[in-house]
Length: 453
Ligand code: FAD
Image 1 (cartoon, rainbow, N blue to C red):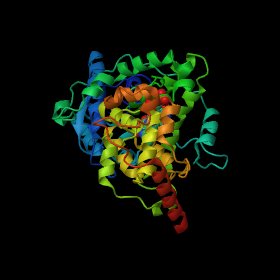
Image 2: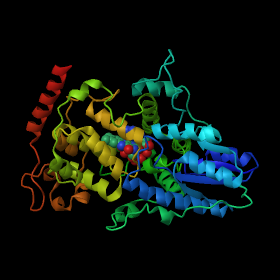
Image 3: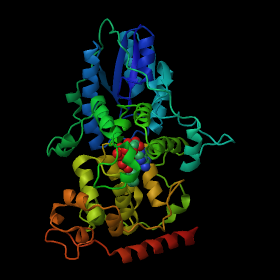
Image 4: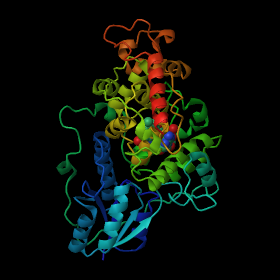
């Protein structure tokens, strides 16, 4: 009988253990993607992720078709959808990769009851949950986690895509991507994303090729938003269009000191380990003391932040890059997140949700981990009282060219003036709050929180 490959965010053929195991069985293979918004705890993908998903599924289907196979699309609860395919085709065995978001763990349990589910590793450098302290406990802090991970790395070399995927005698029915309406209707806000990205394995391969030559300079350039110093692989890694082992070996083989880059891949693994320990990490403070922080309810200021109208050029540039391309440079993510949390004193969860909706790399674990890190509320976190000064960060990391690109109102200002325009040009807002006042207010709020503890 045929074998099902159940796909989620592992949309690739190369170094994909579920495809490899299904191909090795010698049985016909039915690749299935289920759009599941019904499994309990499910967090529906944001708009930018749905845009990416549409294109990624389209590209994977084209790759499968070139091998005489195809992708079957179903909608509904994963266990019900896969059980229906079992009834229609006689397929009993399902191969899939492990996922760690709370809803995927519930879905895996449900599918395992209905069919013979065989789970494989491969979306992370090391299987989350397996890197533990001497006492067998999971790590809460990144640095010892990564030190212990390095003992077990590098990952095994990536496996090639299967040469063939035998087709079943007949294909079960499939939805079409058009049925799912994942793309924006009107207005079409995806133009900037189309110009920036090529979702799918080929796009990921292009990013790797472009980055490998620059990887030696990563440590020097990764904090400079005006340079293309980072890999821009995050959405490809998030959707599993390329495995982290493939990225690791491509970059490590390029030579030079790439440890810093590889340790960033380590943050990706670390975030999965955190959501295994705290499944509701996107909703709940890692440190309970933060439940008492007196956040402000300020919807107009939240909207100004979302739309890049705070009067702080580096923050506005980042928020506009995010809206236009679905991605933001990491240094600017930290500055923009810190600004929301500390300058505006708005709950980090409002920012987490905005990023969830607008990032093409929106990732349950990585997003929550980084927001909680910036807020100071996480298990491993920056101190709340260390308040980033956005204007001096902008100058320190030489963001002038970046600001000119994303905030055209400021394009004519010279490097000395652009980080903190003394007389903002017409059309560009005055600062939403003075830095000194914001700092004092944030420290007072933190003091009030401590007093409650
Ligand atoms: P590179 O610098 O080239 O790094 C290589 C890869 O390592 C990335 O593609 C990513 O998979 C991983 N990585 C790097 N830094 C981190 C990190 N701090 N945490 C986890 N993984 C990391 N990253 C996401 O993938 N999804 C998110 O939803 C997300 N939300 C964030 C929210 C905030 C507030 C902040 C400060 C950071 C967030 N990040 C998130 C982490 C980081 O900003 C992005 O991974 C990075 O900017 C992606 O660009 P890149 O591929 O060029 O990264």
